[in-house]
Image (cartoon, rainbow, N blue to C red; front, side, top):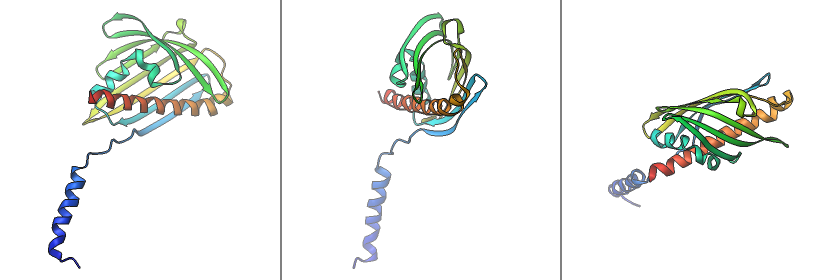
Length: 193
Protein backbone atom coordinates (compact mmCIF):
# COMPACT_ATOMS: atom_id res chain seq x y z
CA UNK A 1 0.00 0.00 0.00
CA UNK A 2 1.28 3.40 -0.98
CA UNK A 3 1.43 5.96 1.80
CA UNK A 4 -0.49 9.22 1.55
CA UNK A 5 2.78 11.15 1.33
CA UNK A 6 3.66 9.62 -2.05
CA UNK A 7 0.40 10.55 -3.81
CA UNK A 8 1.14 14.29 -3.99
CA UNK A 9 4.09 13.95 -6.43
CA UNK A 10 2.01 11.55 -8.58
CA UNK A 11 -0.87 14.05 -8.69
CA UNK A 12 1.52 16.86 -9.60
CA UNK A 13 2.95 14.73 -12.41
CA UNK A 14 -0.54 13.96 -13.78
CA UNK A 15 -1.55 17.63 -13.48
CA UNK A 16 1.59 18.78 -15.29
CA UNK A 17 0.95 16.28 -18.09
CA UNK A 18 -2.63 17.52 -18.49
CA UNK A 19 -1.63 21.19 -18.42
CA UNK A 20 1.38 20.58 -20.67
CA UNK A 21 -0.62 18.69 -23.30
CA UNK A 22 -1.26 20.84 -26.37
CA UNK A 23 -4.91 21.66 -26.81
CA UNK A 24 -6.78 19.74 -29.46
CA UNK A 25 -8.23 21.89 -32.21
CA UNK A 26 -11.96 22.36 -31.85
CA UNK A 27 -14.22 21.59 -34.74
CA UNK A 28 -16.49 24.08 -36.41
CA UNK A 29 -19.21 24.99 -33.91
CA UNK A 30 -22.48 25.58 -35.76
CA UNK A 31 -24.75 28.08 -34.02
CA UNK A 32 -27.41 28.32 -36.72
CA UNK A 33 -28.05 26.58 -40.03
CA UNK A 34 -31.39 27.32 -41.61
CA UNK A 35 -32.39 26.92 -45.27
CA UNK A 36 -35.76 28.13 -46.57
CA UNK A 37 -37.38 27.72 -49.96
CA UNK A 38 -40.11 30.27 -50.57
CA UNK A 39 -41.71 30.50 -53.98
CA UNK A 40 -38.78 30.45 -56.41
CA UNK A 41 -36.19 31.74 -53.89
CA UNK A 42 -33.78 30.10 -51.49
CA UNK A 43 -32.49 31.70 -48.31
CA UNK A 44 -29.62 30.42 -46.14
CA UNK A 45 -28.77 31.65 -42.65
CA UNK A 46 -25.60 30.20 -41.18
CA UNK A 47 -23.68 31.23 -38.07
CA UNK A 48 -20.71 29.42 -36.58
CA UNK A 49 -17.55 29.72 -34.54
CA UNK A 50 -14.46 28.75 -36.53
CA UNK A 51 -11.36 27.59 -34.70
CA UNK A 52 -9.04 30.01 -36.52
CA UNK A 53 -8.12 33.68 -36.11
CA UNK A 54 -10.20 36.25 -37.97
CA UNK A 55 -7.28 37.51 -40.11
CA UNK A 56 -6.64 33.98 -41.43
CA UNK A 57 -10.34 33.39 -42.14
CA UNK A 58 -10.56 36.72 -43.96
CA UNK A 59 -7.56 35.82 -46.16
CA UNK A 60 -9.19 32.51 -47.11
CA UNK A 61 -12.64 33.91 -47.95
CA UNK A 62 -11.03 36.63 -50.10
CA UNK A 63 -8.89 34.17 -52.06
CA UNK A 64 -11.51 33.78 -54.81
CA UNK A 65 -9.18 31.90 -57.16
CA UNK A 66 -8.98 29.07 -54.60
CA UNK A 67 -12.74 28.66 -54.05
CA UNK A 68 -12.77 25.46 -56.08
CA UNK A 69 -10.44 23.88 -53.50
CA UNK A 70 -12.86 24.77 -50.71
CA UNK A 71 -16.05 23.54 -52.34
CA UNK A 72 -16.15 20.44 -54.54
CA UNK A 73 -19.27 21.77 -56.27
CA UNK A 74 -17.29 24.63 -57.83
CA UNK A 75 -15.96 23.49 -61.20
CA UNK A 76 -14.43 26.75 -62.33
CA UNK A 77 -13.75 30.14 -60.74
CA UNK A 78 -12.05 33.28 -61.98
CA UNK A 79 -11.78 36.92 -61.09
CA UNK A 80 -13.01 38.74 -64.19
CA UNK A 81 -12.25 42.29 -63.10
CA UNK A 82 -11.18 44.53 -60.23
CA UNK A 83 -12.96 47.83 -61.01
CA UNK A 84 -11.89 49.28 -57.64
CA UNK A 85 -9.38 48.24 -54.96
CA UNK A 86 -12.13 46.80 -52.76
CA UNK A 87 -14.34 45.35 -55.51
CA UNK A 88 -14.03 42.07 -57.44
CA UNK A 89 -16.19 40.70 -60.23
CA UNK A 90 -16.04 36.92 -59.81
CA UNK A 91 -17.47 34.20 -62.05
CA UNK A 92 -18.06 30.70 -60.71
CA UNK A 93 -19.41 27.61 -62.37
CA UNK A 94 -21.13 25.36 -59.85
CA UNK A 95 -22.34 21.79 -60.24
CA UNK A 96 -25.53 21.89 -58.19
CA UNK A 97 -27.12 18.55 -57.35
CA UNK A 98 -30.24 17.67 -55.40
CA UNK A 99 -30.42 13.92 -55.23
CA UNK A 100 -30.11 12.62 -58.79
CA UNK A 101 -31.02 15.99 -60.31
CA UNK A 102 -27.90 17.94 -61.30
CA UNK A 103 -27.29 21.14 -63.20
CA UNK A 104 -24.26 23.31 -63.94
CA UNK A 105 -25.00 26.87 -62.84
CA UNK A 106 -23.07 29.95 -63.93
CA UNK A 107 -22.92 32.73 -61.35
CA UNK A 108 -21.25 36.13 -61.67
CA UNK A 109 -21.10 38.38 -58.62
CA UNK A 110 -19.89 41.84 -57.77
CA UNK A 111 -18.15 41.43 -54.41
CA UNK A 112 -17.56 44.47 -52.23
CA UNK A 113 -14.85 43.93 -49.64
CA UNK A 114 -15.02 45.70 -46.31
CA UNK A 115 -13.01 45.02 -43.18
CA UNK A 116 -14.22 41.61 -41.95
CA UNK A 117 -17.16 41.66 -44.37
CA UNK A 118 -18.02 40.65 -47.93
CA UNK A 119 -21.14 41.72 -49.78
CA UNK A 120 -21.75 39.78 -53.00
CA UNK A 121 -24.50 40.81 -55.40
CA UNK A 122 -25.39 38.50 -58.30
CA UNK A 123 -25.21 40.05 -61.76
CA UNK A 124 -28.20 38.33 -63.40
CA UNK A 125 -27.23 39.25 -66.98
CA UNK A 126 -24.15 37.00 -66.59
CA UNK A 127 -25.71 34.29 -64.41
CA UNK A 128 -28.22 31.46 -64.35
CA UNK A 129 -29.81 33.28 -61.42
CA UNK A 130 -32.43 36.03 -61.50
CA UNK A 131 -30.72 37.74 -58.59
CA UNK A 132 -29.43 37.40 -55.10
CA UNK A 133 -27.27 38.81 -52.35
CA UNK A 134 -24.81 37.13 -49.98
CA UNK A 135 -23.33 38.82 -46.92
CA UNK A 136 -20.48 37.29 -44.92
CA UNK A 137 -19.51 38.96 -41.63
CA UNK A 138 -16.51 37.95 -39.52
CA UNK A 139 -15.71 38.92 -35.93
CA UNK A 140 -12.67 37.89 -33.93
CA UNK A 141 -13.27 36.15 -30.61
CA UNK A 142 -9.80 35.55 -29.26
CA UNK A 143 -8.21 32.89 -31.46
CA UNK A 144 -11.60 31.98 -32.94
CA UNK A 145 -13.81 33.68 -35.51
CA UNK A 146 -17.54 34.20 -35.34
CA UNK A 147 -18.96 33.93 -38.85
CA UNK A 148 -22.41 35.12 -39.92
CA UNK A 149 -23.44 34.16 -43.44
CA UNK A 150 -26.71 35.08 -45.11
CA UNK A 151 -27.49 34.23 -48.72
CA UNK A 152 -30.65 34.83 -50.71
CA UNK A 153 -30.92 33.84 -54.38
CA UNK A 154 -33.46 33.00 -57.04
CA UNK A 155 -32.60 30.53 -59.83
CA UNK A 156 -33.42 31.51 -63.39
CA UNK A 157 -34.59 27.96 -64.08
CA UNK A 158 -37.51 25.93 -62.82
CA UNK A 159 -37.07 24.06 -59.53
CA UNK A 160 -40.09 21.90 -58.60
CA UNK A 161 -41.51 22.95 -55.24
CA UNK A 162 -41.18 19.42 -53.79
CA UNK A 163 -37.51 19.29 -54.83
CA UNK A 164 -36.75 22.76 -53.43
CA UNK A 165 -38.34 22.20 -50.05
CA UNK A 166 -36.87 18.77 -49.54
CA UNK A 167 -33.81 17.53 -51.33
CA UNK A 168 -32.44 20.87 -52.58
CA UNK A 169 -32.76 22.53 -49.16
CA UNK A 170 -30.97 19.62 -47.44
CA UNK A 171 -28.25 19.69 -50.11
CA UNK A 172 -27.74 23.44 -49.61
CA UNK A 173 -27.51 23.00 -45.83
CA UNK A 174 -24.94 20.21 -46.18
CA UNK A 175 -22.91 22.13 -48.77
CA UNK A 176 -22.88 25.30 -46.64
CA UNK A 177 -21.61 23.46 -43.59
CA UNK A 178 -19.01 21.60 -45.65
CA UNK A 179 -17.81 24.83 -47.27
CA UNK A 180 -17.16 26.51 -43.93
CA UNK A 181 -15.50 23.40 -42.51
CA UNK A 182 -13.07 23.72 -45.44
CA UNK A 183 -12.66 27.45 -44.76
CA UNK A 184 -11.86 26.67 -41.13
CA UNK A 185 -9.31 24.01 -42.06
CA UNK A 186 -7.57 26.21 -44.66
CA UNK A 187 -7.58 29.14 -42.21
CA UNK A 188 -5.84 27.03 -39.58
CA UNK A 189 -3.23 25.99 -42.13
CA UNK A 190 -2.56 29.59 -43.23
CA UNK A 191 -2.47 30.83 -39.62
CA UNK A 192 0.35 28.36 -38.83
CA UNK A 193 2.55 29.55 -41.72
